[in-house]
Image 1 (cartoon, rainbow, N blue to C red):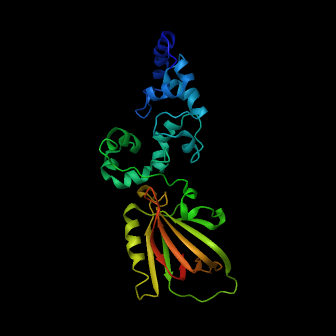
Image 2: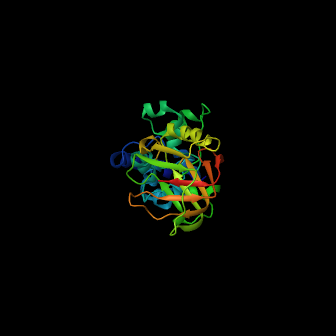
Image 3: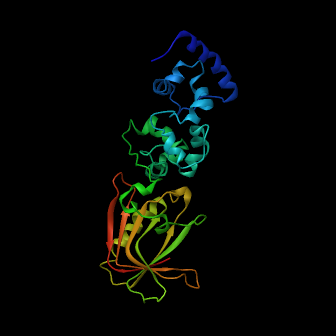
Length: 281
């Protein structure tokens, strides 16, 4: 590792400047990791966090081993200091700092972290990992998961729509044909639900194939602050017919098969398979 007395002295002096301009070094910034990973920073006379704030952030350098700057920038336009953006804005929006860490999933699993108001990644690094707590993989880029692989954007719909805190879905065992229905081979509905609503929805849907009801209606909570800004489930519809939008604003999709995927685990899994029917939303 490149290091001399001159850079060390320079870091002390520029550390004074850094404290004046940027304040304290965030706990999520790992100076040792940063200097070990980037030789130009190690050879520089700049304080490590000052280097990151002025130079490294723009170059895509990672501030610690659990923060992937390139991945984070796929979710936001933050440029100069992505770590500060995550601390001040990103975590509250449910952005994920690394492909192997889901901000909202971690908060959903551990209410004590929510109550503590500690940044979830900081909690995981300082407490969660030593306590063997679970960190789920990010779902911020869901096209990499099996149910969405190869699906064009036009055939991948996300629910709820922006600004909604709940939405309705209705399962129909049968529905009449529509002369203007558009045939589509595959449609995918990504569902963002409240943490506690996910398992309830799965449990009810699992009873549909053996039930006797011709119509099953759901009103699903989708509060972004409770995890709904990140999809938890994907409803994969195959061999579909898309009906035109009705006068009341609803729409019906007929399908030959529907498969519900739980995408919260590291390896997404099929949780429910439905025979032919229709869905209205």
